[in-house]
Image 1 (cartoon, rainbow, N blue to C red):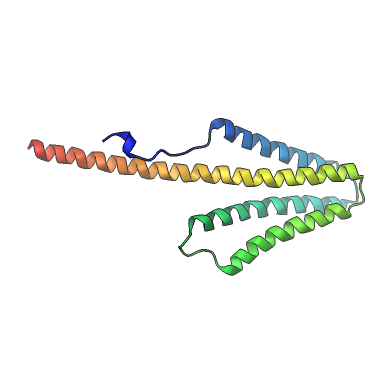
Image 2 (image 1 turned 90 degrees about the vertical axis):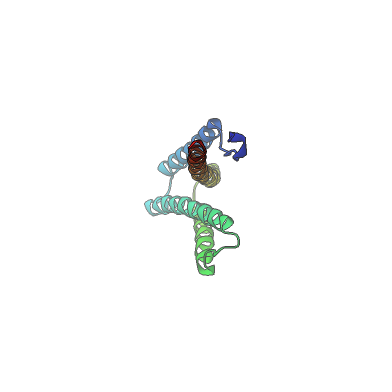
Length: 165
């Protein structure tokens, strides 16, 4: 049986994977640098660190939730309350962090740097989550296809053996 009878598993290129990881690393570095040099009171600094971490974790949860529900079309999806928790958590994280950043009494240029690096972090986190999930899905499909190929090869070998006898 030829390999053309099997679907091709689509994978991201190594260059794309490197670009995604580098972009995410740069975003984390920029946010960490801005947070480390953030002027203001200690409580404001801690609030912003917590806000950035909350936004980052809410982004990964939302990305997973969205992807899981996309793959479950027609099947039992998440409950409406869980949907509310995920979207609500993301909205609250983004809203409170944005509100805190806007309300800080800091240089407008520094505030703009913090806002842009924060939004860059969120977008790269969504891209990273998608890339990792795509890799997982491709690995799963490849394993299934490999198992089917082995089963077909074994059944063909058994059929040839029984014909030869």
